[in-house]
Length: 419
Image 1 (cartoon, rainbow, N blue to C red):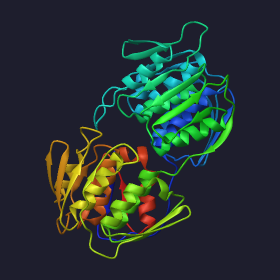
Image 2: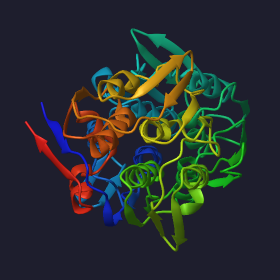
Image 3: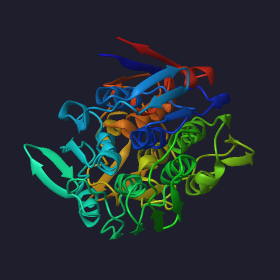
Image 4: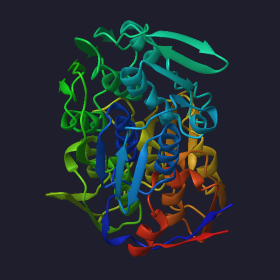
């Protein structure tokens, strides 16, 4: 099993290019199931989850041509309407094939995702929405079996989400593109990745209004056609590199990024003492004063993202003062706390709240990654800790960060991958 070895103490300096967003690429790849024509995607990140999604789509019959940073997906020969458990258990985003399959073919069989390290992520919102659109759904042997009455199509409906669900919004938005009539999604997710999917679907001929707000209206069309689409930049990778630079008293410039989808993250970095300059497709950060602690509370977009909580926790461990951090999205998203404590962090947990007291230094040790964003927090901790930090189980990192050790090395970090 591979590990990362980090020798702490170096400031990050220089320029780095941000990759395409994993959380936009995965649903957009599933959109290829909606058309018999070719969907051409660019700025696709080279990540383990993207490879897994490719395997799943190929298994269904999608023809995929892979070039560096590009995918051409051709869905004319789809002959298997199923997402098996061995695929879904490794990547919950596999459930996003459900909506497109039942919309175009009238049937789908998708494994229930099962457990997740960071907490419960049920698919009941997906099922409830599809039932409202006329799908007949049963749970058989751990699989969701969905079908529309023989010869029929999904029908437009008004669907209210009990809780804000990103994948639920994406699944039902894709399903609605080929449904009869109009579908209105209320209390819909507003994340930029949902908007990026909508832009791709519109390029394929879908009629969608309101993406980016909490009410999305989709008017069904007879069929979708091929299109070309560029995947948006990864806002969480952008935030992770900015936090790493702030923590190491660095000076970096991010390229191929977007400041307009990072408002809450940039505000918290400025509050921590960072100087930030925003240009077209770039963000520059320099840190010339001592770090200050920042309080934060996670919530659905446009509030502070849960995917950046762990990275800011590391920042707070070495900042002046104390900070309260409240996690409202996932119940198990403090698993990195135990590992940060091994490095000398002072963190107390009470329910869904962490109290982080800044300490003058962290000390290198061997730690274990427990999930994707926890892994990133441990990398940042390793960059600032005295001595060597070894991070085990880094396959989590490879699910969401493209060549992270190479990018950090070019910024001056002493980091290497070891067996």
